[in-house]
Length: 164
Image 1 (spheres, rainbow, N blue to C red):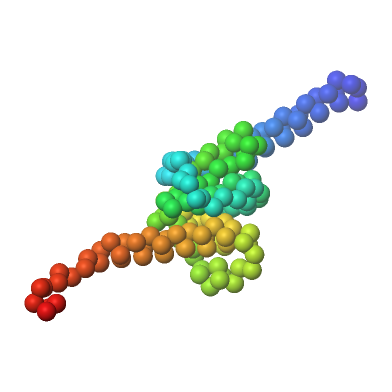
Image 2 (image 1 turned 90 degrees about the horizontal axis):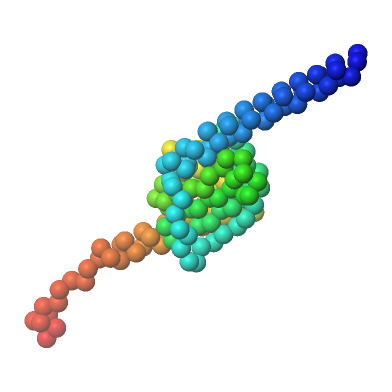
């Protein structure tokens, strides 16, 4: 085989690799980032957010191991892809706390470490995310529920005759 044949084989292998990588990246973008970005557009992060960088998250066949920055504030879970993933089409999204749920609270309670993956939902999308995130969301949802109960509970009117 001459040099032209070798160059043709190398070019064909590189072309096939490029097509496969493009197809995988398109699948990740279209099945994970696009639906979540459309349903939950990014919002500004509030102060006092708990943020951890380079976290792992997955949904279906898509596993973003160590490629996501996750923050939880009083209103949203903010998810932003790391720099390299953004260059490949990843988009940020902010999920309202009311749209976040954990599938198995017992597994969340058993998760020994904060990075331990726990299954849950962002709206209708099944995700697996770090336990610390679901714990923080649960804590903030409980705070919001307590505030709603306090705001709905109005003090009873006191009659002057009752005081005397």
